[in-house]
Length: 571
View 1 (tube, rainbow, N blue to C red):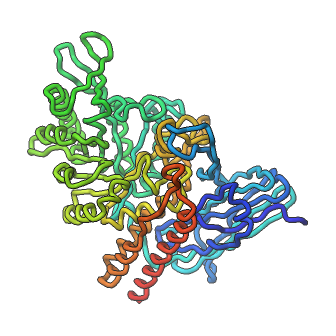
View 2: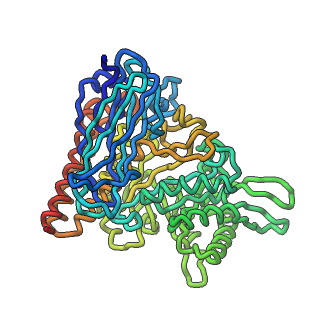
View 3: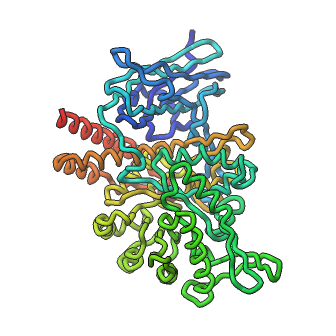
């Protein structure tokens, strides 16, 4: 029988795109020996290349994974899925010339797929290691089959489970925060916001976030807090009404449903409310006296601003105290430079115990002139791009704030930043990002956003104003799916892997002075000099494409060595 396809385990730090066909055809199994801690997750990627003929039905399955003594991993701990391609304009959406490239980014399903002649199909493998798993090396195979003629290929895999247990996500020393857009989820599926169908969709959707270590949630407190940057309307979870007598009253119905749902899932210990300085300062409300919706735009610090927002803060304080949520509330401000005036107002409104709301800020600017504002911010996240000119100052800030467990100091990436986690970004960039943040002393990573989907993300991730994929890291199901299930992306899997590995490193660093020194050497080795193309911003150049995947393998290998060093020390 003539061969109709070729398959190999390849690096997960690069996309298996069509342009790499000839390169992949020359590869051999290079990334099929995996390792993990107990309670951990490890991943791999395989490339399947069709040869001269179309394959109408290509299927995949995993065998059992067993140690030499017969001990096996549970069947549901291992999965293999085909990676679905989606399109993207490579570059900023404002410069969209209607060109599109395809990227395998959606972890879709293990249902058989059609494969055109001389094309590439990615397969993604995940192994979720139970906390009670016995240590040792488990071996098994990925079986790929051409159902047209029965031809099969087998890729041998091994998973070494180390006798170390991952901390629970709630105990992570380095965490992840992804802003959520539940209204966009409802719009995509065509369901009533926070109705029964929406709630069921959100449960599985948000549990993925929780399993990654996510615990902070996002709440809108004005209409369109980001000036319509999402596809579809984005209303306020708290409805504003101006009474005939002139005072405002507030309806917390949607806010309560959202926070209550997340709290029931075991997240929402940090509720970030956006925003007291929305784009254009706009506040939309229903005017009872005039019987219509109106919009005002009071400027921070002005009398009208104080009058309106003081009423809101007092109402929110009273409501969240009744609900038992007061200590979880953060007033969030996103990329604004006049935060001091808003902070003055927040700090002037106190509860019966003299406490004020906490404050959170995402700042795409950094420097000494902002230190007085940062000192007043309980949770601050600074953009990765401006940090590169102020590395030492940010390190000193992290050290200064590190002594107070109530303060969070994190890093985020967004539009224009490089490296990043756009649809077309190297998967290696997503893995690098948590290590970069941790190397500076940050306690976490923030990303806009988890699920602010464009119109048809399963087909095209291009955004009209930003880089493709900038506003979401997870994919929806088909809009008409009977029981919708969210789908991980390759870039989110790699970001999650980076978060887990940073937490392993930080855990080991606390076990002994020697391990601490070795861990710091690993973090010190994280490079910051990766280059991007001159033609389009935030796109890795050829040197980075060659070097970054290897560098990320080296980081992970160093972590493996540190793990085994600790086990040797303990034995």
